[in-house]
Image 1 (cartoon, rainbow, N blue to C red):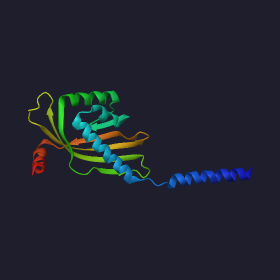
Image 2 (cartoon, rainbow, N blue to C red):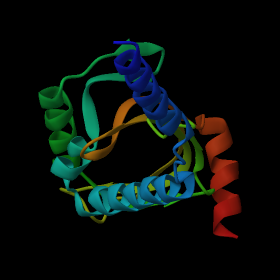
Image 3 (cartoon, rainbow, N blue to C red):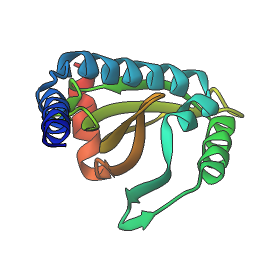
Image 4 (cartoon, rainbow, N blue to C red):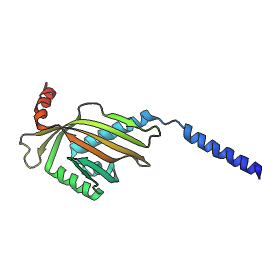
Length: 171
């Protein structure tokens, strides 16, 4: 009996040590999150609401304009489909390299984005383009299907600062 307890203890210790010491390739996860950013850029420019919604995991938390909401997948899908049917994005561009922080065990990550967006109404492509500069932080959880966005906190550059910032982009 003592031998059995000893062997089981050694096996358990081996499992714990192996699990604690397993190296995680954080750079590979960073590259995966950058590819996800590029995929989202393409989806926004192509008006692909389905891809945009598929990157999120539900329940989902959104912080914007002083509100905290928990949209369902169906609500997000409808919101993006409505948005993509009325607006055509011609720019969804990083103004800086995304700032990526990944937990040591690569189960959670945060990514801070700063983007320049340009869009025109679908029903009036000759209209003056609308531009905005946005910054947001997204939290991702790693799942068997890959990284999934579980929350975001969004801000936009106030109108009084936007004109000045856009001048700098056009130089």
